[in-house]
Length: 420
Image (cartoon, rainbow, N blue to C red):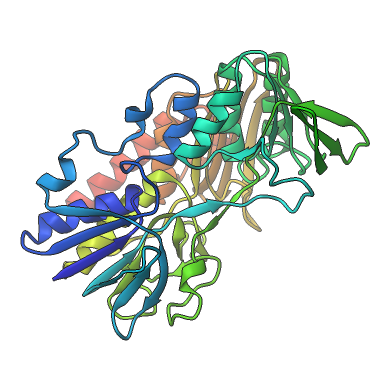
């Protein structure tokens, strides 16, 4: 059996290891397009902050890890897939045949359509090469502009601030973290960052970037200009599916997969940031570009590729973020649903906030800011879809009683199952 995996991120690596566990004799190859050992992109900000060195970003340690498992690592980029011939054409001029194929090519950074966005000194923070370029210029005292204050942007914000730069953050949306946090929580995060010395500008766009000597000058929608030694772009990512154009593999925003992570093409599966599967909360198709989803995708896809049927229940939208010491998290349908109810508790002075969204007597989503305890309980209540019964009203009065509600209701459910 020939297993071919496109992508050397968490989904691809875990899939390869799972396949080896299931099939000791198969040929397993991972195709990666960077001259690095497989690494975690989400570790790059920790590298920039000085918390780890480059080896700390590696997904697996030990130079012989993959060779010991008889897993081939091949550096190239996929350029086309022929599902009839069961073959992938690569950028090095070779072609690789497969019996089962996993597409785990992840995402690529998406630069905004701004004049000057591709000048030297404008860098993404998405690859190891990007991280090295940022580290070379983001020295203490340097003037740095970060474009984008979404989830990835705020992770990068933390790393840049740790390097002692003079940091300005520009976000086109009216608030920071527009897809992760509501207005109340986002305002608290912006206030926190401002108090920490970060210049935060929301509802502002960069309209043009021009060179001026050794620096760059950014023209803003407000009419102001800002000079910078470095501009870091964190304005979003998109699934890396361009090489699938012309194939018979169905794609929408990403590669469309079913509950077994199989694509529309026979013998072809997809996992990680590139896979557009089912959302746990809504049942609609969605992409959840987070490492826990990628890891589980890789495992489930590999089991199915090896003939061990396994179902993926859908991804729960969730993010946990540390912004200059302020921890925030979001889970599920935190915006709420029609006919549902929400409960909030806010303490702006202490930068603490909690929002619970209900559908009938079940929690379907939540936001938490400044709360580090019981975050796992929130996730458990949502994923278990447990009926709260009288605890819904108790949580409406005091949403901080989450642990009591979880223990009471989940224990009761377990006891009923045991008796049944």
